[in-house]
Image (cartoon, rainbow, N blue to C red):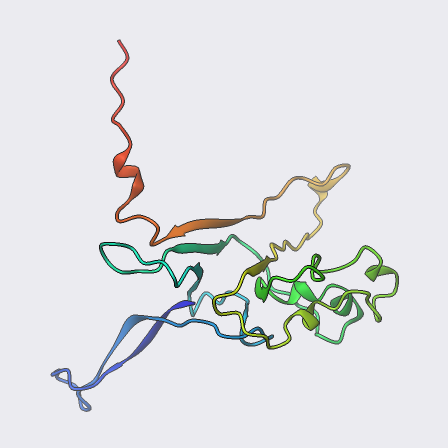
Length: 190
């Protein structure tokens, strides 16, 4: 996880009483284990972060950086219902925009079609997937929730208008430079 943070730099000569300056910096960390606080994310615009999945065994020749991919959530909404609400128990994955777990054959789906028939007692408990196992250097699953809150309006009658949701995958330290720079220039059409 790579986060943009703000902090103080000590010892920078300024005309301030305490001699410190607040600046922005980037801090990266590697997630070690699964968990509801450890390997889940709900984006916060005040604390931007990028979640990357890297191969620590590989390194780029020029810079020595581990290649991988970043997950970039598009416009989304956070779950507003409390964790003990019956709907949340039936769809626990909606609490997170991104959740990372170790890949397991018996954890193929985040919910069951039957969970909504008895929402207080779901067949699949997504939070049980986040059981504290090590995720470093393992095959991982990134569970990405792209949510949209539908607020009805008169233009939705008789048919609800389309609205988009999305997320992106972006190469992260895969190439030594912008790969688009290698695209051949097209010849003018006469």
